[in-house]
Length: 210
Image (cartoon, rainbow, N blue to C red; front, top):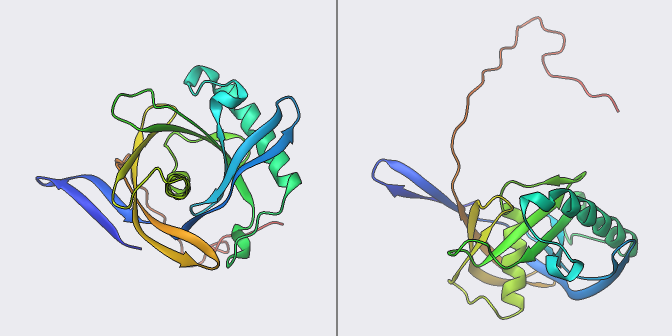
């Protein structure tokens, strides 16, 4: 993985990295979702698989005040898509599942291009635009002809945090027309921890119950 820091004097203000090959599986598919009716979605991979749904098409606003409605709708869409189709990664069997639903729509901030609200795993909402989600979104925007290679695509989250995506390069990968997306964002250190392992600790290597 290639990462590049963007410096401002002695400080690193952001970091950009090239992600894995990202690709669109299908555009404008439809699925019947209980309580929502017929929902149109795009299925794409950017490190994980997501179903992308226009928020307005299901009557939702992508604001913090609507986060419970977004979770309910996103979880229902995820379940419906999983029941309706197989989601299969061409190489990594462990990635062959739908990780979440990403709602999309116009940005609320003046200097962003779009907004992502990612409902993932067991109904969590991402505080960020989601790195893998923005990667998949770059693949969608490129497939639809709305994002030229090298051009930036700024995506904000439900709370306004932002990632910038761009097409670093295009390639044919495992039967898909794919892109290698570059994602740029900022983070801050909030703490450090230290693990101590005694030489006679019987659980030094941990344990698993399954």
